[in-house]
Length: 510
Ligand code: HXC
Image 1: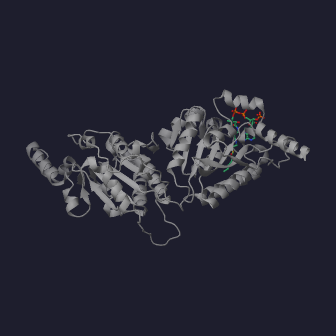
Image 2 (image 1 turned 180 degrees about the vertical axis):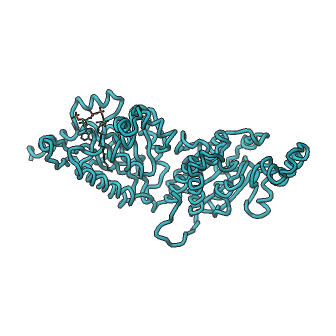
Image 3 (image 1 turned 135 degrees about the horizontal axis):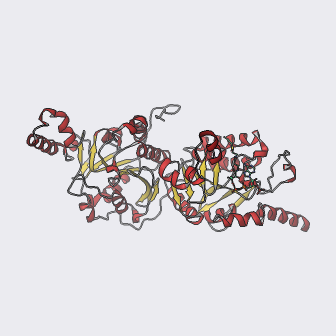
């Protein structure tokens, strides 16, 4: 028995040693943690149960039969985050650059399948060189198996990808199909093809960072949902995110005891809206003052900043906040904002998370760039997402709700359950100046007449009462009582049951 135990320990030690001390030291020298260190930080102390530590690749080409490292470049298993089960795989860059063989892929698909079956989130940590070059088509097949599980698991369990090193080729498409992607600044990059191939094909000279660094993807392409300073910060933020999410679509969002008074009023909100309707104010201040303990997890903080999407809690239960941000582009809806918010709304709907929407939107952004970029289709994504969502939807119009954007932002007409406005709300087809210049075009040469017409239009529409008189708003509330009213509404909506007509799936404008 003793020698068997010793053999077992030797095998475990070989797996834990990964690609060896030198490669581990290289990893640390680059400011990165190892695959196992990352798992230790992500999960509760001592909770990790590792699977498939002894799996080895089956490749016999290019001398690979003599190079076998148990575990084969990925550490997989499950553990807990604040007591709740999550499945995890973490690529080990010290073993063949974390590259993917068929055996490596099988380890990943095993934990994906278990996560889907058992209703728990699946978290992938990426730090790898793509397909195992020595292995050829089997590696491509392995990727496809992973993609299939990403697709089948979508909307069933939360899937989170954390990019903590290189991520190229086959490795990018699995994260792309997960719910959220996060990156580490300076040590991670993500692209379909690297700088060398780019140079050959398009003759552009770019660095790894310019092509696929965290700043590019968090702020420009919108591929990733957030970027952090280092491995430690990233993994502790992932723990915070997981706390907000239900484990699967079979569950309600997690609820925890709230020590923030549900009846708490905030008098400072009564003066949040400036007297000048063209002056911005920070919508985030409103969300922070309304949410339990001001605790939020923002998704896509640096991308499409004219809309805020964030998880928070009301009375201890997770809600998704969506809010136009007047501080950026006056809170207008453009392509980026529409895409970002549509995806967030769909995530919330898939995972039974109620949606709270704050509206201050002057409309859709006009212009060639937007139209050429397909604003019509992208704007329709948000419209579609809100309309199809069956979770509780509570909306508060704080100031402007103009034009099509009024309809889009969780209006009554898109099955908003409870729709409030602050007394400062203005609900109209467009702003008074623009409206008058169109309907009284003949008076444009007469500034006095135009001023009178503008005032008339403003008096008629720059308030919430026309919409309230039609029942499109359920009430006009004082800003200070927003938190209380939201909580009461969500309590009343706890038993909401609404189903869309049967279909195989919808055809959201993509
Ligand atoms: C096998 C690989 C590998 C790979 C890296 N290694 N990538 N082994 N297959 N894809 C090995 C290296 O040989 C090296 O082994 C170790 O990992 C570390 O690699 P380095 O190059 O020394 O590291 P670094 O300088 O940091 O560069 C990292 C890198 C680079 C940028 C990721 O290794 C690289 O460009 N790799 C190839 C990327 C690639 O083209 N992959 C295929 C993509 S195609 P030793 O023994 O020296 O430590 C693809 C198609 C799938 O993925 C499509 C599915 C839809």
